Length: 461
Ligand code: SF4
Image (cartoon, rainbow, N blue to C red):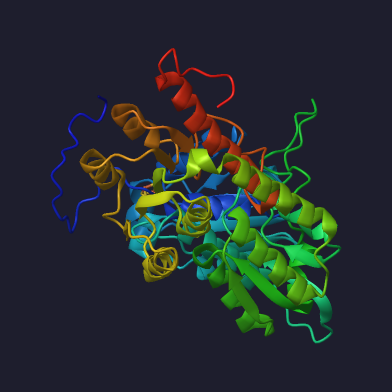
């Protein structure tokens, strides 16, 4: 009973958050910046903030995450962090030689009102930014939004720094903003686009960065990440496909403003229908056909669903995590004939509830759907205490609820600190859906094995 103080009684809270179902904006900004080749993330705030952001990513990816900090002390907190940031820019270019420094703010630097564009221009005018190098930035105050908002803001910051208008459009090429997905998900998008023979640019791209192989040779900057040349040519694409409304719309809007490249927002390609919509959008926007290879993958997924339907039918579930992931994941679970009970996200934004309500109505279901500051893990645990579910899906922190309530638990989302796999195997596309499905089935079948009587303990279930 690790969470022994969680009570069953639900009391409406207006100010207090207990165990938030999200993390802070700069974590997302740092993750997005790592998806740019030879980019060095920099946290403009105290050392403690940067240590937390780095450790969250390091523990999730089991890779050393590099980042700088402006190392605010009392002086910078009172008089502003300009001197610290200018010094940091000089040090980072001199010692680590990145092509780009991506500065994100923190609660402290936002509260004192540091003007990052002004400080960066001061660094440039005083010769601290070498020729051909860049300092880009995003405002990421963590008392609003979540790590997803921080990711979206940094993607917009990257686009603001590099995208140029181009009248010579490549009519069959698109930009894809992949949303907050894992490096293997970005690799899976690359694979799908290659199979479709479709032309595209992916931004940001953490594949080959946070899942880099161990070779015995140290590379300070892994070979992955979107390049400066690619980012400068975003304006030459015919359109942009923004995957995930919360993580990708801000960047797509920025690109539209700067280059007049129009955009469409689609759900992340998670599950059967999410992947269908993604492939059809790519086909429509690039003119590429959906090849037999992908149709076969879809057929295999449908085959597993129909073979194993009896183990999924009417199983209840609770989800918590990031809104862009929860929307198509819920749809996938509904397609499996599972029953939603509680869907919780710490990321604010009215689109989430609207979209979930539409989805649930379409499938004739009702569920508790809540997002924002009070949609926290404590609330989720209270709901589960009142009525248990058959399956809980969410990040590592859900293990406390799962253990206390004895519920099968699938780790999915960010962060996952106590398992691996998420950095190597995709969850997007039909292949990713097959992996999600087999993980869910394993949980149900293991539970059945564990709980069955000796007479019912079967090899073939
Ligand atoms: S102070 Fe703000 S930016 Fe720093 S770790 Fe805490 S929430 Fe994140």
